[in-house]
Length: 293
Image 1 (tube, rainbow, N blue to C red):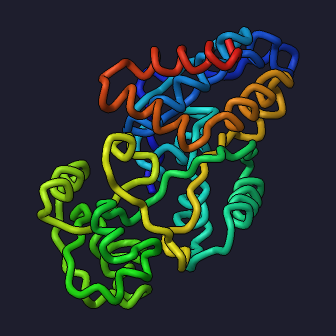
Image 2: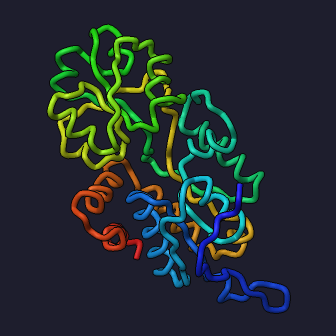
Image 3: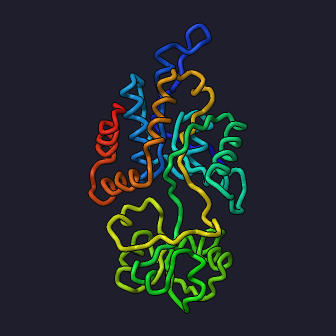
């Protein structure tokens, strides 16, 4: 895979007598991916570290997980937020369901450690695929778990076109749960909420941190066979950068991550994606409210 290129990326290191100067130790480049949740996470990192005296360059929309990880490894960025399940599936190569979030974290941390990257504390929240139905539909059929869908007769499920095949796509759900009664309708991301509210579909592929879940009567069914794995967020920091940080940086990032519950991240996502508040402002309000800046 070709190395990612970030135009205008500022050098993050300087040397004096063969060692990094104090000023260089306090300069960091943070990256984020191309969606609202990642923009917010990047702003939380950047503003919190600036409040602690670091000079921070924030690079948004760096690219996919593969691209942003290449940027980290090549030194174009120093820190970025990543999902533990992405590490385990995309890079470790484990595509079978793991039993717990802790097991997923340990495997991800071990892999990153072997590749020169430090992994800090995971968030309580995780952002992963899930199956949701309307509360009325759940009550009618006694639905609590995905496996409960097996005996209810034919129904229609929607997901986005790129998520039909694969282990956690439509085909993977049918195979894992034996849902031969689940018909498919493909819709662009976000349109599934409108479709299920209009009754065009009975079940929808959602992400667990979607802010729309706060404003709907949808019930997220338990993934009782752990098909969708675990997707908590961790800060990834290249070892050469981490070794030169002062203690205040990892202390801040760990404290921040401990506060990011599912309710907190849904509220942040809602403010940005639905209420159209700038991610920088969303992050600033959260940090100030929690005494982090």
